[in-house]
Image (cartoon, rainbow, N blue to C red; front, side):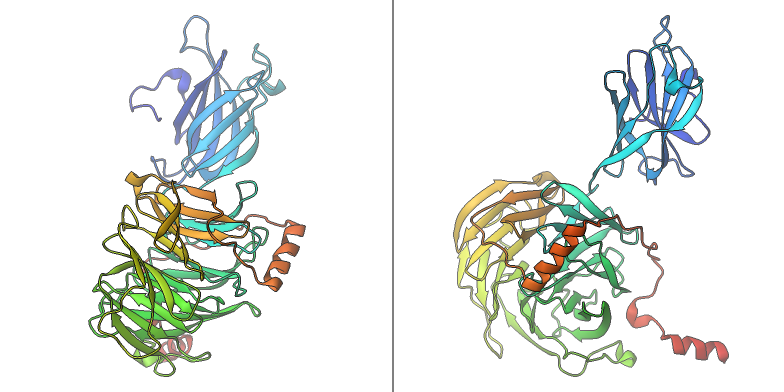
Amino acid sequence: VAPPAGLARAWAATPSRARVDAIAFTRTHAVLATTTTAAASPGGVGGGVALRFHARDGASPFGGDFRREVRLGDVGEAATSVRVGGERFDSAVVVTDRAGIYLVNVEAGDEAGDEAKGEDGASSFGLAEKIGDYHFGPVTGAAALADGGVATCGADGIVRGWDLATGACAWRVDAGGAPLAGLATGSLAAGCDCFAVASEGGVVRVYQCRGTYQSPRLLIRVRLTVAAPDALAMSPSGTRLAVAGDEKDGCVWFVETDSTTAAARVVGRVACPINFGRAVAACWTCEDQLLVAGPNATVAVVVPPAKGAVGDPADAWAVKSGAEVRSAKVELPLVAVAGAGGSGKFAAIAADRSVRAYVLPASGTTDTLKPQWTAVSGVGKAAFCGLIAAGDGRLAVAGGDGVVSTRSGEKVVSSVAAHDSDLGGACAIVACPGGRLVTAGRDGAVVVLVDAAFPEVEVDGALAEAAGKDGARRRNAPVGSEPADDPTEPVFKDQRPADDEETKEEE
């Protein structure tokens, strides 16, 4: 904890603009962890982290001289805690404000002050290894990868890939610096090798990523909404992404992807029924049918635009061919939905905390869509829920109370408290190859569970083979940061085409 202003001692003097973030003591030294940055403020962006060693005078516990400085370098993080240990106090562990953990060889020298075999006051770089890289703040989404790993995103603006065999972070992407509101992916059995993330500023990014050992490739970046999308859902094959917009009566943007050519494009938008309201949740019940849950106990069933369709730029990119929309009433508003094996089947969590299973009618509308079955009080809290459904009727539910459970129809098969209820519990759950369930929590945790009650995830053969080749190479170098998002960037429908801009300049 940074010391209160006005209590600095002479022995703790630090270079200009370097704040003291943590202090540790050995038998002979006080060790100050400092961060040098142009914007030195708690919680602000970090910079150069250093460990400063001050000899402790035997006459006074707070006397003595500065001896040496060991620098971790400009890591872009600020230290929050430090511990020094080892037989000769030659190792330090530094924890940062961005959930990083560094192991540092500080080369302590002997007790007489022969620091790193150099002169007093010397400065050097320690051998620092980042041994921990975790989300700080809520984790807001998760996607299973073909090799058994998982990708997650969070309010820290980072997308991370995890090797579930070791628990290590295999790669990370700083996706524009803005908090990420959610993540969506398709089905591994259908060969999906893409996932999408959306920021609080409405920027959607689609990445292609087969597994833990393939760094993600950005296919498209586009700002579709002013704020975070209301809902995000990817078709089973991963060739279509649906983004529920932030308009008063609701709309759905569609994005087409093509992994073979590593390309993606915005198709356009489809309006929800009149007075439908803003979307609450969305899922694909099959490859050609999207379900959108509204706030007024209504669901919209959307047939997406045909492949190759293009919206009309003159009409806010509305798609006028191929797309169809119909609606149906349900007994209560639905807060989470998940497709359940095709043929119009889906599972849902309702506003009264019940878990339900439905089958959509083949066509037309119905006054009220009745559930096949209902489990009363299926979750402790209905906010920030995650839900996945298998085609055989089994479900995995992650609730806002932090409890993760598996179900066979109405019956609970297993249940475990995995996240902190006071911090919002769990908000997403995915099934990964290897019999694992992975949850993303508002408490900042990614929890891995092995649960035989949920069926094993199938992976498309060609996708599994490609992910296996990536694993054999093990080329999982971290990805650099992407350019920061501009909050003043206009949304897609308000952007002028490049040729229009050139014509305006000529005039």
